[in-house]
Image 1 (spheres, rainbow, N blue to C red):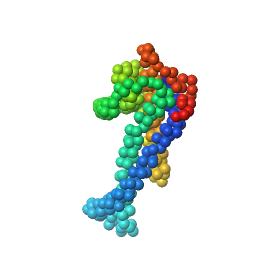
Image 2: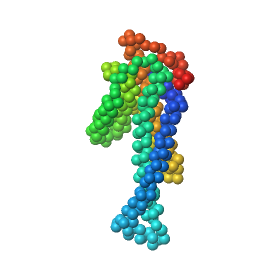
Image 3: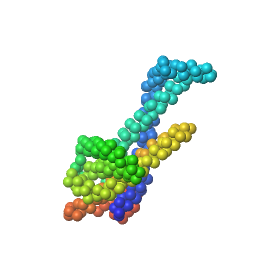
Length: 286
């Protein structure tokens, strides 16, 4: 448990590094920019199209007439902007968060390597194409496992065990691969995956449970509609910060394990930059 807890606390400490904080806030800035651009170019046509669809729908005609009898005004004109916002927001959020996630993983690995393992040789055992194929293959396997295990969810304890295990497996497969892709050879990566399978799975499962926190905040935004525009940005920021923490946890654990493996094999290794220092003091100049 020593390396597991050590990497956990280091990951928590690195979440206070200004670069990580900036990366966690990047989705909010990107969402604002994309939303403003979409609003400038597409807002008026989108609202006009939705309003026209509401007004010309035969099955809604009777409803509009009935509501006008009670004094309601131009309901299609009122509903159209709200429907456009509700339809566009999830798409914009998902695209922006995924874009930042793709940028964040390499940035996190680079940060940890520079501050803690500056002399660790980069054997580049996984290219970008291999990483994409690995992620797609792991995701497909996880989806198949979920589909096959659905009947077992009817057994009360298993519904609380199987999904977290499957998503934890997927998380460790993807994030551990990204953590080692630049520094480990293919053979080293396979050895570490085999040697630390259960520790990596535990990190993946715990990271998955942490990832549920933004969903609770998001659900609160739906329940408390008045606070929607406050709670949803908070949920997005928490999700990105959890992703950064998970990536940091895997990176610290995997690179430290890689360094120990090479030391066992007698390869010359420089002393780690933070052998005696707390995580935030690894490299004050970085």
